Image 1: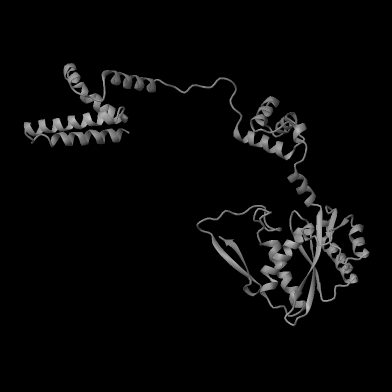
Image 2: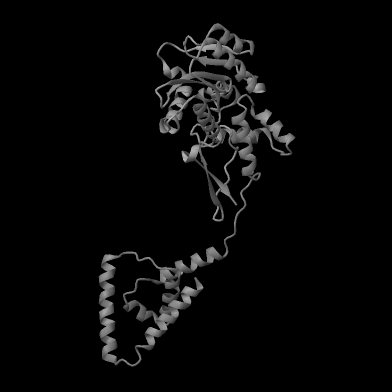
Length: 358
């Protein structure tokens, strides 16, 4: 601001110096023209906006005029205006920051921690959250926790304890697996059948159980046993298995999963939406893989789908998982200017995977 004031003063001085060589008649004519322009502007603009630099220059120049002369001139400022400007300067100069009475406000980090605990633990009340914060080394009163929850619009524990539909479905999805068949026609007009299992609905991880041209009930039972052996300890949290009413699922097939502590649930007739996640994966596998290749035989199809399953589980982004793959990392590394992107091809260039290289 000081530089601006100095610049304005310098510009005005240069303008006044240019008036020295002019005659008195020219100066008087310019004064009359400028007075008329000011009168026109005053009729259009009632209260002009002046910066503090304009006020300083006008106040300094007006001080050199006598009182009688100031009364004759039609100025946009008055003595009352000058006094008001001076009063504002005094008020700004002697104004100090006032400290708000009462205890200091709780820090934003503790407030975020309180809200996070309340959302993650619906059954916790404000006293329980206060106790947890005390164990973490934060000294905070229970009433403060109550005020933080109230300002955020979070209900007390008895009303908050009831799980929402999103929480309920998320918990249930961790215990649900699904199995299904789909077929692929080879280049020699043969038909192959693919059995796959989606381990957990909430992760969408796919397991290729087997490929055959003759899907008998005995073959299906054997693939079920192999699948459970491959799962290992991952079957501990599974409680339900969804399948359709295909005759290839014999009683022995259900017995394999029942012995592992799972309950088999069959879908209604002609209701593909009852097993929508499996149907979604079949569509993705067809559009991105099998419909773009000529399959020669069973071994070729098994190799192709194995490559696609690895790509699907380890790299392909999923909107439901926040654009992360089922077996992907928990966080995404932010890109920078010095990051180089490396491309990896699968299935002869049919699938492309991109990764960052420092």
